[in-house]
Length: 231
Image (cartoon, helix red, strand yellow):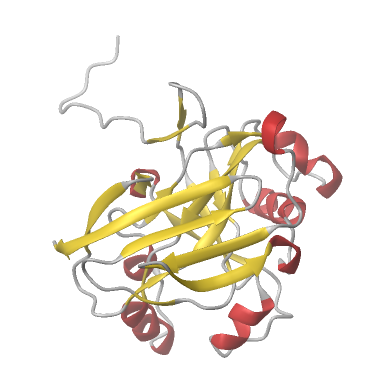
């Protein structure tokens, strides 16, 4: 038996819809600028190929949680996303085989310290401090493919205090799920437990302590989050 000098960390996980079981989280990959309108609202070219950044697995937070407004930022942004849960390992996965590697889908929010991201962009530095902070990846229950199928269209939306801020359709994805899974697997060997946040539609904006954030993807589910005082 392996002996550790300190207690090993618990395995991060997210809920599974209509089940007491949970989906263990290994790594979180996120696709940047995967909706044309969002790319344009940030001043970028929607024709660019997809790129990825990461969040730690323990950044996941269950739906219906209350989390503190994060440190080091005065401009925290919401980004609603379809989340892909990988259930089968694969490296250099052909696009047509990508759906075979998906266990299910969920609804996530990519929380972003936008002011830190803007500073990093100007200095040509990594995005880690703006994207990969504590509790930066809230995720609703994962719905198995046997129930959801592989959604290719349907409303994706987010509201703050009941007012809709983001309202798009999965059909607007520049790079659909099969492409995202295939391209990601060209760089890393995807493993069961990996999550892929697939990008956000236009309408991202700032959040404040006390805000209640809700969102969803048709045919997949919804997520709800409350933002508490600063940590």
